[in-house]
Image (cartoon, rainbow, N blue to C red; front, side, top):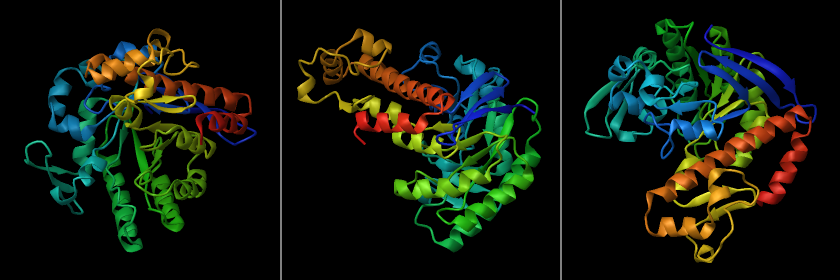
Length: 370
């Protein structure tokens, strides 16, 4: 198989998992956050900078790369790793979330999803087989099955029909996937906010014996306590000897709470998106750099951070960059936010190793202002 998960330790204090995920492009220490490189680039960051901040794996987007520049072009270039100059692991999503986010621009059938491009309005059809074909061309280490991510307010009947179709699609993805020795295909548990439907989805997917499992359909607008409740009863359903991926989360509190509930892998655009808008994640909470109080603030973004941005520049200088629309400001803030989240994950791994993750959480929350 393309990947192998090694469970090293479970925290005695919290039950959180410390592990290693072996992939064709390197070993990943888990729990881990994956910076999002939607269009074959993590916005504002070079691959060398990502390595500097200890990024172990990045995520790229099947939907966007299919539309531009096209998966066949990337395949001709030697695959996504070579195309973007990144020689460490890559996970690609199936494109399903983006397609289902198109609303009136898409139509779901048993065969797949017909949609119109958000770029030029052209018609396309994404089937489970097509999602696998695209990801095979990209050559990612970890691929995701095509699933439907239903809206959080969908009724029970819709959710049940949706998850059952997702299971059928998952089986078709598995049947279409032939590069099992170099690319791993993960299943995605759906079921909305209904415990019995989550159990049904997990049970059906476990029968297909994927090398890894994701939990989808969370962080889509539901209250955090409800998300944690779903994780409480869903995560234990997943195999201990395989990686567990919670899709689409990236705030420090959710990362901590999800790790405590047994999850291993995470991704989100939030750290890079808010960075480009001038918001920094720091050990004492968010810093909005455009605020006037930072005009003469000659201290780092975060006095406890060892990243290049914090060691080199002041808040006053960063505010100046944003007020004058200098590109460097976006880059320096993005560098810091990603460093902050990846450093948080490193500290979480250390806390698990030392059986003190709950103590670490309390200390972090007190400083961060939760």
